[in-house]
Image (cartoon, rainbow, N blue to C red; front, side, top):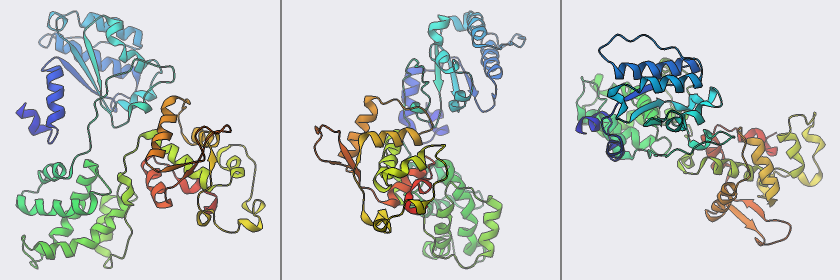
Length: 403
């Protein structure tokens, strides 16, 4: 247990939970990025299991082309005495890549214990929510274990472990403290913060290298790095240029300028489909109803904005404020902007109710009115752009005022 806690920092509760559930039992670990075909994935699992069952003997490579063959061969491999009486664990990292393979693969893995009559557990590791995995045909529902975002204290502890040997740990910890003070409100991703820490550290050290400041002159070091960190906020997640190009620009650009960072609203936590519901509500509130055909139908023909304009429409819809819209229009826009098929389940309607409770939507009129409820979207443009950015949706392309 102490060894695991040193390897996986600041995840003591999750490590403890997994350890209590699984213990030190036979397992195989597969990276789905490396297995770009179904055959390669199934063969890797079987061959690693085969080595577990007979580690000292020279095992011939197993070939497997279909999931039916995999079930049959899995039974044979797990008949070994070393595996027969124990639970076998198959860990699939980057499991979102399974969605690009055969449609029956994910449901098959979820029912592998039933199909093989063996004590086997499949563990999917992914940064994607389960709602984006679930097949339209239905499947066995797995147990979901969420790993919450790191707290600022945990990020400080993890990032401080990366300090270069030529500088003291306290000096690097002070730098990480400054970095998190700037970026924590807009970015919680450990990989991205690590990238930013490595990218901007030479600039932080610059006064020390030149002999203009000591390692403990935190105020002078902060004044030197502050404008560059603000500029770096503009590049969070974007990767529009490489790290080497960014460093070159930092050296060439003497005027940091006033650059606007990402909106602080990016840290608002909403379920995946609730974000799309809110986006659809915003579009319904600020777009005229007759423009829906233009924005959300593929074959709408050429329609110019000037053909829609009337005398009273010269004022921006954003200046006039949000307009009420019916529920059926909200759902129609939602189904148009979401990539995957979304069934009109009670879950969707409960999420709409939750958005009303959070005062992100407002119910217009009474709930029991005969012609159906009407809503208004109460969020600002900056807020909805930040929400849309988290799901990679360009909302400006769908707003009538910005045509």
